[in-house]
Amino acid sequence: MRSRAIEDYKTTLVLSSVQREAVVGLLLGDACLETQNCGRTYRLKIEQCARQQAYVQHLYSLFREWVLTPPGVRSKRASNGSVTANLAFQTVSHSAFRFYAQQFYADERKRVPELIDHWLTPRGLSYWFMDDGSLKSSQSKGVILNTHCFEQRDVERLAQCLVDQFGLQVTPRRQPDGVQLYVSGHSYASFSALVDPYVIQEMRYKLPLARRTRVPKE
Image (cartoon, rainbow, N blue to C red; front, side):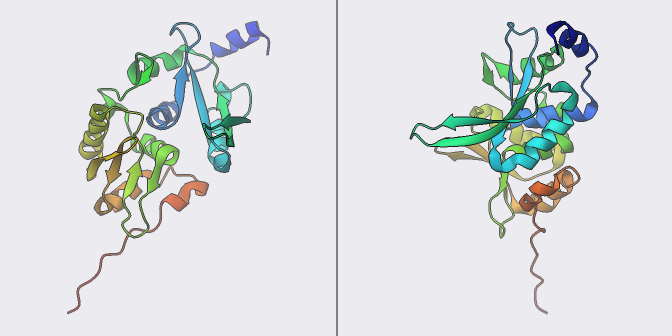
């Protein structure tokens, strides 16, 4: 599209309720917002490792009308010299994302909004989990949500949100590179019920059957 046609097209774009819920979860994960005009508009940037191709394609489909160029390969060189290939795409820059940038960023650094409990839904939680979560082990069924990019107080705010909004047993755990959230295996059935309707087929390996409770012998 030519620039004038693009600008005209952007005036027709409105985030759907599903997209808004997803944005919240994605920003708690690896997604980021970027501005090139001092905060007037922002674009959403998605980047995942190549093996998560199905997930990237799902996100591309979810935001299809917001994206001008399909996902492409981006090579990244690590400090040790190794090169990895990621899949990435970005939306058009748009004022619709400004609200989320104002809530999720301070001094160009990610933060957790004070009102996160108003905006995080089960769908948003599922995108956060698919984006940056994992199962601690198939035995314990504890769920790990990686929150290393956030400060301690932000992680504690997220933990309280998960407790208050969804009734989960959640504990912040300090790691060498930051703080992560641990959802107890005792809450796995509740957690699974919340995110199960939204987890795509290719990510269902993260949701094994709930752990069995041993029945005492009579």
